[in-house]
Amino acid sequence: MAALLFKLRGVPDEEEQEIRWLLTDNNIEYYVTSAGNWGISMPAIWIRNDPDLYKGKEILRAYQVERAAHAKQEYEENAKAGKNKTIIDSIKEEPLRFLIYSAVILLIFYLSTMPFLNLGN
Image (cartoon, rainbow, N blue to C red; front, side):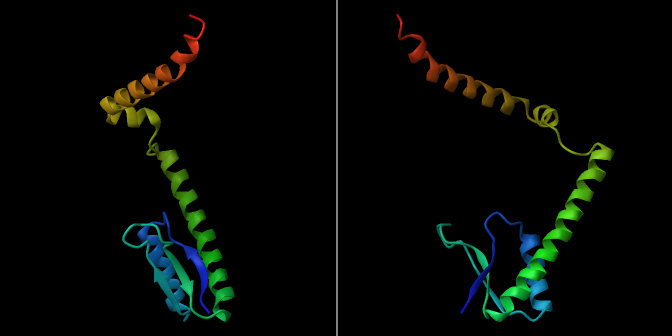
């Protein structure tokens, strides 16, 4: 009977591909389900045989530890080099978008609070 190994919702394509390569290299039979036409199904990697599930989980755990360490190292290198994007960088790149979002937030705040502030009048 098939068993769920890894949910793919929100997973980058390269990570999914690397996991699939790992499973193939370790001779673990699997299949992949998609989110479907409407995106409401569960995209995931499933292990075909229950005995391979434990081995698959161990491989996946080791891969995720390695990937997290690599991402942390990359982040720290970018931080030292000043390449990480900040909020100020985002505002400088798209100031009009920032102004429009700020105006919408203030409008929603105003419309949400004015009925309560006018109760006493």
